[in-house]
Amino acid sequence: MTRDEAQSRMADVMERFLTLACRRLPDDVYEKLQECRDAETSPLQRVVYESYFENLALAQKLDRPCCQDTGLPHFYIRCGADFPFIGAVEDALRDAVRRATVSSPLRPNAVDFFTERNTGDNTGERMPWLHWDILPEGSDLQICVYFAGAGCSLPGRAQVFKPADGYGAIVKFVFEAVSGLALNACPPLIVGVGLGHNIENAGVLSKMACLRPLGTSHPHPKGAKLERDLLAGLNGLGVGAQGLPGERIAMAVHVESSARHTATIAAAVNVSCYTHRRGFITFHADMSCEQSSYKGVTL
Amino acid sequence: MKKVLTLPIREEDIEALHAGDVVYVTGSIATGRDDVHRRVTAEGMDSPFDLHGGVIFHAGPIVREGEVDQLISVGPTSSIRMEAFQAQFIAKTGVRLIIGKGGMGPATAEACQKYKAVHCVAMGGCAVSAAGQVEAIEGCFWRELGMPECMWILRVREFGPLVVSIDAHGGDLFAATRAQAAARRGTCQEPVEDSVKDYMTVE
Image 1: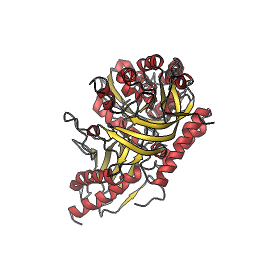
Image 2 (image 1 turned 90 degrees about the vertical axis):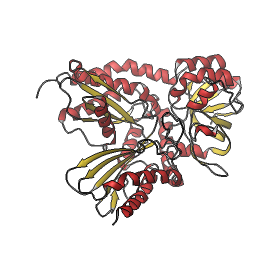
Image 3 (image 1 turned 180 degrees about the horizontal axis):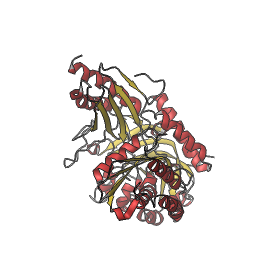
Image 4 (image 1 turned 120 degrees about the horizontal axis):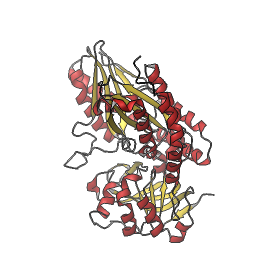
């Protein structure tokens, strides 16, 4: 296969995958949302969840994006060092975004700074956003697609603390972020907490935390416990779906970390709305592929 | 029974609403978000669509643009972004019903009382259901702002459910929820802070 053929194949597949991923929730999120619905008892929460599930069913039936804010396309990529078409990936993804904007359709959301013009096709300066991790072994390319909407981007924040502030500062920071603007971000949320040494490394980790499959936990027992404790604490605030009174403001809290500088503790919080449109797909060296987010769906 | 507000909305219709009520709306409503609000207030332009007794919907739809524009999905965006403009917007346009998502601030709440308007929330993310309640796109103004930001005029029938979040009597559902969350925060946060107080200890 030539590079051009690989690029064209990837663009075709990714256009279809983007179209799929903006229409339905990944299986793990759908199941968790059902669980959250069942935990709510108030009539108002019932109205909200009925609307949620009716809309998700209708989006599939009518073959339309389930939320009008199809966000900006983010791709978190894990690329085996021996994947043969690394050079084709960025152009393929850019093509896929342009084409899906028309064919799906996606809402054109990309506005370049300073010209302040909507580009019309969801591409623009450094958009789509690509994050690369190179894996030392293997020839697979794993792509995580995420539609980054505005409502759930708005509460995002990062701060660097002094070691004297300790882990308590992290807890306080998460509570502040979630009990503030995140009420408006279409709960129940996935709360991603990134811990590192400065704002950009904590920020990237907080997004990776959001993207992690539900049901997984931080590898360190203390990290995993912090996730459970934060979830229980946040869900005690008395806030439910849509930020209205209820029981579950969050579906999950995920923590991702890197080593920190001995003299800093950086924390970032990123939240994802309940329409957490995130899908995983893997391309092999021969450009065959499979997705792992939607059971029973072939591309 | 469904409580349906039919446009134009009168002052007495607004007086009858209270935070927490579930309502639906029928008539021709206008979308408008950050840019529309900035134009009408900070930039001093007139709303191209008469909003007296009308509805401003904080929303940016997906429209398949063509000879006839086709509405694909439409749903509310975070209303708090419009807080800086909303009070002046209400005063200037005579709009009665603001539809959005999440809470707004004290300036909007005050303007709702003063000018007899309410803020309602539509269900965030439920954009296909909402599009199904739109009978037609009746117009589009300020298209140069781009698809999400321009003003779409949508003819809706029994659009909802909408939950009244800020009424004209000083009721504010999100302020109440936030206050409750703030009151509970200590008891929710302290055990978590406690659980990490030894985390700085070297393992």
